[in-house]
Length: 401
Ligand SMILES: Cc1cc2nc3c(=O)[nH]c(=O)nc-3n(C[C@H](O)[C@H](O)[C@H](O)COP(=O)(O)O)c2cc1C
Image (tube, rainbow, N blue to C red; front, side, top):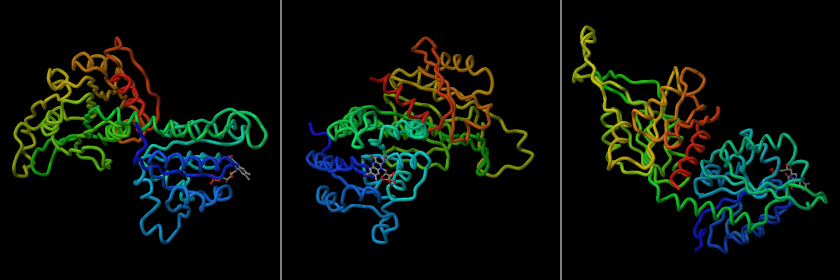
């Protein structure tokens, strides 16, 4: 089966001696039916000509961040949106350093900074450049940001030295990109549901009970699931976060609405309940704005416990039910208790007593408690919520497969 047919590949060629291999890459991708657009860095043009690249790709070559003609269509954004995947081959030490620091001073680095696609790097450089501590640290950072590496290989280099730093051969690069598309289509059979954000429990038309949840961790989880090929539904309380277009997004306000939508969108293979659902709602929501004195008579009643309901429901229960716990004290015991009480498979616990992580932060540190592994716990140390999400989704895939 041809896994690359009609796939859209944005190939970024940097200024390294192995740029000549990119021509072979373009030829092979085209032969397999992929569509290729290319960006050449300024240095790349010293190694391969735009004319040979355009002849092989049968597309125009992009190279200028400030091109009046191209930017009328916002190429620095649209090229990434167009692509299914971005491949940088060869990836130079310089471009790797720029990516790891978020620098964006040319079209290639700007497109990648503005991208939410999977980016594969095929590094190629002299062995000393590859082994330099700064390159090593940059690579570690990029892996944490979710970049995937292909190679480099050990062998004789163009500079006459021997060691690690050779760009992988085009066949190997193509095989890795094909593998990626195969796993994406395999994971398409999986359905995922994520709840996120706070809920609002209305007192009257203008006032409500809510909490500090920003929804960031849940949105990142939905993004990671969708990136890995899952058919993903995100049911969210009010936030001001953006949602990717591949995600089936359902916006709700109250716990009751979230419960209704959750039921409607099950069964699924995995459900991750990261929403901070208000425990209580007002017994009798007023249709008119209430007066000060009436506050004293606000009767509360318990909201439905969505996680508990779903994980104990025979026909709705997903194969894998994951709950979140935000704890300020005794994280371990409270999480283990929740794991049992709510009959879920994993609890992902945050210690929200630490103000710099958790609620509203882009960073998090979590501990996963696994019921199906004898309550074993696993800590995912402090990192971006996007990276935490990728790691959680890798574990979800291991479990489902
Ligand atoms: C002949 C020659 C070969 C080079 N080969 C490499 C290489 O294989 N890998 C690399 O990282 N840099 C290599 N460089 C250095 C890069 O071209 C240089 O760092 C440049 O700034 C990279 O720009 P770019 O990352 O925007 O493409 C080479 C330079 C020259 C002059």
